[in-house]
Length: 189
Image (tube, rainbow, N blue to C red; front, side, top):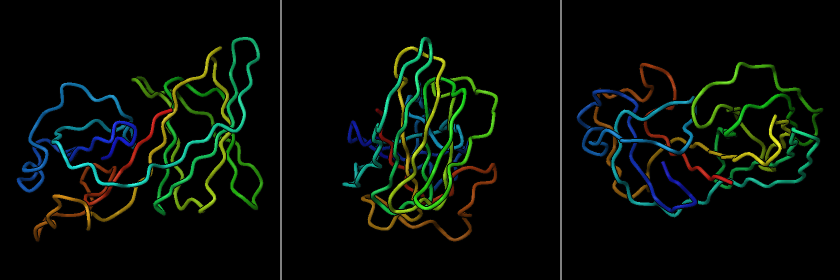
Protein backbone atom coordinates (compact mmCIF):
# COMPACT_ATOMS: atom_id res chain seq x y z
CA UNK A 1 0.00 0.00 0.00
CA UNK A 2 1.34 3.41 -0.99
CA UNK A 3 0.32 6.65 0.71
CA UNK A 4 0.75 8.92 -2.32
CA UNK A 5 0.67 12.12 -0.26
CA UNK A 6 3.39 11.11 2.21
CA UNK A 7 5.26 8.97 -0.38
CA UNK A 8 5.43 6.20 2.22
CA UNK A 9 4.60 2.56 1.61
CA UNK A 10 3.77 -0.44 3.74
CA UNK A 11 3.45 -4.15 3.25
CA UNK A 12 0.04 -4.99 4.70
CA UNK A 13 -1.39 -8.31 5.84
CA UNK A 14 -5.03 -8.68 6.87
CA UNK A 15 -4.47 -12.14 8.30
CA UNK A 16 -3.54 -12.93 11.90
CA UNK A 17 -1.29 -14.76 12.10
CA UNK A 18 0.05 -14.13 8.61
CA UNK A 19 1.66 -16.83 6.52
CA UNK A 20 5.46 -16.84 7.14
CA UNK A 21 5.99 -15.42 3.63
CA UNK A 22 3.79 -12.41 4.50
CA UNK A 23 5.16 -12.15 8.05
CA UNK A 24 8.65 -11.49 6.66
CA UNK A 25 7.35 -8.28 5.09
CA UNK A 26 4.64 -7.34 7.60
CA UNK A 27 5.96 -8.34 11.04
CA UNK A 28 4.47 -5.53 13.13
CA UNK A 29 1.04 -5.14 14.72
CA UNK A 30 0.01 -1.57 13.87
CA UNK A 31 -0.67 0.76 16.79
CA UNK A 32 -3.10 2.71 14.61
CA UNK A 33 -3.99 3.02 10.95
CA UNK A 34 -5.24 6.31 9.48
CA UNK A 35 -5.62 5.60 5.76
CA UNK A 36 -8.80 4.07 4.42
CA UNK A 37 -8.41 0.56 3.10
CA UNK A 38 -10.76 -1.02 0.58
CA UNK A 39 -13.57 -3.10 2.05
CA UNK A 40 -13.15 -1.19 5.34
CA UNK A 41 -10.40 -3.55 6.29
CA UNK A 42 -7.97 -2.97 9.13
CA UNK A 43 -4.46 -4.36 8.79
CA UNK A 44 -3.49 -7.14 11.16
CA UNK A 45 0.22 -6.71 10.39
CA UNK A 46 2.32 -4.08 8.62
CA UNK A 47 5.91 -3.51 7.66
CA UNK A 48 7.83 -0.71 6.00
CA UNK A 49 8.04 -1.09 2.23
CA UNK A 50 10.02 0.89 -0.33
CA UNK A 51 7.88 3.64 -1.84
CA UNK A 52 7.54 2.69 -5.49
CA UNK A 53 7.26 5.59 -7.92
CA UNK A 54 3.63 4.91 -8.79
CA UNK A 55 1.28 7.67 -9.93
CA UNK A 56 -1.50 8.50 -7.51
CA UNK A 57 -5.14 8.23 -8.46
CA UNK A 58 -6.63 11.60 -9.33
CA UNK A 59 -9.32 13.19 -7.19
CA UNK A 60 -10.58 16.44 -8.68
CA UNK A 61 -13.29 18.62 -7.10
CA UNK A 62 -15.43 19.85 -10.01
CA UNK A 63 -18.08 21.67 -7.98
CA UNK A 64 -18.75 22.47 -4.33
CA UNK A 65 -22.05 23.84 -2.99
CA UNK A 66 -23.31 24.60 0.50
CA UNK A 67 -26.93 24.91 1.53
CA UNK A 68 -27.44 25.45 5.24
CA UNK A 69 -25.97 22.45 7.02
CA UNK A 70 -25.38 20.43 3.84
CA UNK A 71 -22.45 20.28 1.45
CA UNK A 72 -22.66 18.85 -2.06
CA UNK A 73 -19.51 17.88 -3.91
CA UNK A 74 -19.12 16.79 -7.51
CA UNK A 75 -15.78 15.06 -7.96
CA UNK A 76 -13.99 13.05 -10.61
CA UNK A 77 -11.82 10.09 -9.66
CA UNK A 78 -9.48 8.50 -12.14
CA UNK A 79 -6.69 5.96 -12.07
CA UNK A 80 -3.46 6.82 -13.82
CA UNK A 81 -2.36 3.18 -13.54
CA UNK A 82 -5.21 1.45 -15.37
CA UNK A 83 -6.53 0.06 -12.09
CA UNK A 84 -9.28 -2.52 -12.10
CA UNK A 85 -10.92 -0.91 -9.05
CA UNK A 86 -11.38 2.64 -7.73
CA UNK A 87 -12.63 3.34 -4.21
CA UNK A 88 -13.89 6.69 -2.97
CA UNK A 89 -14.00 7.29 0.80
CA UNK A 90 -15.35 10.16 2.93
CA UNK A 91 -14.76 10.91 6.59
CA UNK A 92 -18.46 11.70 7.14
CA UNK A 93 -21.61 9.86 6.11
CA UNK A 94 -23.11 10.52 2.68
CA UNK A 95 -26.85 11.31 2.69
CA UNK A 96 -27.36 11.00 -1.06
CA UNK A 97 -25.63 11.03 -4.37
CA UNK A 98 -25.02 9.55 -7.78
CA UNK A 99 -22.25 8.56 -10.13
CA UNK A 100 -21.80 8.65 -13.88
CA UNK A 101 -19.37 7.57 -16.53
CA UNK A 102 -19.05 9.04 -20.02
CA UNK A 103 -21.82 7.94 -22.37
CA UNK A 104 -24.18 6.59 -19.70
CA UNK A 105 -26.97 8.12 -17.62
CA UNK A 106 -26.24 8.94 -13.98
CA UNK A 107 -26.90 6.19 -11.44
CA UNK A 108 -28.28 7.00 -7.98
CA UNK A 109 -26.23 5.62 -5.13
CA UNK A 110 -28.28 3.20 -3.02
CA UNK A 111 -29.18 4.09 0.55
CA UNK A 112 -26.80 2.59 3.08
CA UNK A 113 -26.22 2.44 6.79
CA UNK A 114 -23.12 4.50 7.59
CA UNK A 115 -20.25 2.58 9.10
CA UNK A 116 -18.36 3.84 12.11
CA UNK A 117 -14.71 4.70 12.18
CA UNK A 118 -12.64 7.42 10.59
CA UNK A 119 -13.98 6.72 7.06
CA UNK A 120 -17.71 5.88 7.37
CA UNK A 121 -18.41 6.11 3.61
CA UNK A 122 -16.93 3.93 0.89
CA UNK A 123 -18.04 3.27 -2.66
CA UNK A 124 -16.24 0.80 -4.94
CA UNK A 125 -16.21 1.08 -8.72
CA UNK A 126 -14.91 -1.83 -10.80
CA UNK A 127 -13.54 -1.58 -14.36
CA UNK A 128 -13.46 2.23 -14.37
CA UNK A 129 -13.11 3.90 -17.76
CA UNK A 130 -9.87 5.68 -18.57
CA UNK A 131 -11.67 9.06 -18.30
CA UNK A 132 -12.65 8.29 -14.72
CA UNK A 133 -15.92 8.36 -12.82
CA UNK A 134 -17.83 11.43 -11.62
CA UNK A 135 -19.57 11.30 -8.25
CA UNK A 136 -22.05 13.79 -6.80
CA UNK A 137 -22.23 13.37 -3.03
CA UNK A 138 -24.36 15.14 -0.41
CA UNK A 139 -23.12 15.40 3.15
CA UNK A 140 -24.83 16.57 6.33
CA UNK A 141 -21.92 18.89 7.02
CA UNK A 142 -21.45 22.63 6.60
CA UNK A 143 -17.76 22.12 5.73
CA UNK A 144 -16.01 20.08 3.09
CA UNK A 145 -15.35 16.56 4.33
CA UNK A 146 -12.05 14.81 3.80
CA UNK A 147 -12.10 12.54 0.78
CA UNK A 148 -9.75 9.76 -0.20
CA UNK A 149 -9.41 7.84 -3.43
CA UNK A 150 -7.69 4.49 -3.79
CA UNK A 151 -6.88 2.55 -6.93
CA UNK A 152 -6.08 -1.13 -6.89
CA UNK A 153 -4.07 -3.17 -9.36
CA UNK A 154 -3.08 -6.82 -9.35
CA UNK A 155 0.50 -7.97 -9.47
CA UNK A 156 3.64 -6.96 -7.62
CA UNK A 157 6.18 -7.45 -10.41
CA UNK A 158 8.45 -4.44 -10.46
CA UNK A 159 7.64 -3.40 -6.88
CA UNK A 160 10.93 -3.03 -4.98
CA UNK A 161 11.45 -5.80 -2.42
CA UNK A 162 8.79 -8.12 -3.84
CA UNK A 163 9.45 -11.83 -3.84
CA UNK A 164 6.93 -14.10 -5.61
CA UNK A 165 4.44 -16.05 -3.51
CA UNK A 166 5.63 -19.52 -2.65
CA UNK A 167 3.73 -22.49 -4.03
CA UNK A 168 0.69 -23.24 -1.90
CA UNK A 169 -0.02 -19.64 -0.87
CA UNK A 170 -3.40 -18.77 -2.33
CA UNK A 171 -3.89 -15.43 -4.06
CA UNK A 172 -7.41 -14.91 -2.68
CA UNK A 173 -7.65 -14.33 1.07
CA UNK A 174 -9.98 -16.63 2.98
CA UNK A 175 -11.87 -13.74 4.59
CA UNK A 176 -12.57 -11.86 1.36
CA UNK A 177 -11.22 -8.43 0.59
CA UNK A 178 -8.12 -7.56 -1.35
CA UNK A 179 -6.27 -10.39 -3.06
CA UNK A 180 -2.67 -11.16 -2.28
CA UNK A 181 -0.29 -9.57 -4.79
CA UNK A 182 -2.30 -6.35 -5.10
CA UNK A 183 -1.09 -2.76 -4.96
CA UNK A 184 -3.27 -0.04 -3.46
CA UNK A 185 -2.33 3.62 -3.92
CA UNK A 186 -4.24 6.11 -1.75
CA UNK A 187 -4.53 9.88 -2.01
CA UNK A 188 -6.35 12.03 0.60
CA UNK A 189 -7.82 15.44 -0.18
